[in-house]
Image (cartoon, rainbow, N blue to C red; front, side, top):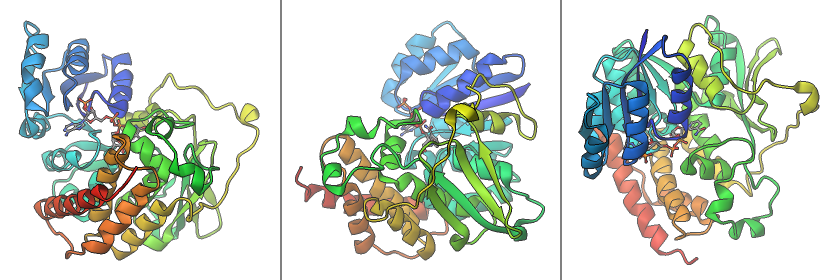
Length: 385
Ligand code: NDP
């Protein structure tokens, strides 16, 4: 039995993880499930999987969780610290699928607890990559990438000969607005932005996919996960989302991982690794797909990608500022306070106003994150929708 904890169990990645483990109850035992405030969905999942503990980060939702779990024997906890405590309950495998910077402390707690951490929360590597990977090394924790692109690279990478890798090529679907003009993009609504053509995902990452910031965050994530330099990381737009990423070797060979655009495939790889397991995912029908298309990204219409590449090259605090400003900008877009094109403008403005030294602890990263948010919020106030 593999003992499993899922951080962000009520979200898109969390639900896909639950779907897989509930199909094989003889193989997986659930230790803890966490959410922010969705007590109803969390309690239902905890009861279905007979979890030991369920945790809501928003302590105000604890009474509802307690009520829903009354008489089940499942422990109910509330508060951000309780989320971190949940990863110290001795799970063998922890899925880190909280969205955004809220995931940083729980991811760090999971890395310090040891075992295997399956990482979906890309923001933790973007903002605190050096600190997080150092913690994983210090505690002998296995860090497995769940993001479909990084999972694909992980499957294609010859870890015995990293010096033979020439390039890592991340594929980007291009999002729902790949062919829209800049003028058309100004009028994009949140509902249009969260409707991704290929993947079903949470709201924040869907908007990031639409601006191509997601691909930029993934470049930074890849830099921390794999033994390559920043200039060995490339992006190519591949609208069909059949190839999930590629590794090019010095001899000219390119290895790619293909599959249906279903997060249960990379999650299953991380769940069973180094083995594989069955999934219910649709099989690839290459004859039906018939062709695979590729194009260069358009940096003019998608400036977020260039901003992320600059932050990656500059290093230090730049990625944490980029990430914090982007979270503020995306939340503001989703609430209707700014238009779609302002997302990149807010991120660029925040990067131009704030340039602290590189952080070397998680607390330093969180302080930079907080200050960058203050700058970004000020910039949001200037926006007219
Ligand atoms: P969702 O928005 O669907 O789910 C987010 C989860 O995090 C929910 O369980 C939510 O709880 C919880 N949460 C939100 N805020 C907090 C908080 N302050 N404290 C504790 N928990 C919180 O996100 P996704 O599943 O789409 O994405 C999760 C992460 O995985 C992101 O970092 C994303 O970039 C990454 N990722 C996602 C992919 C996808 O296909 N969705 C693909 C690759 C990476 P509640 O429901 O109660 O609000």
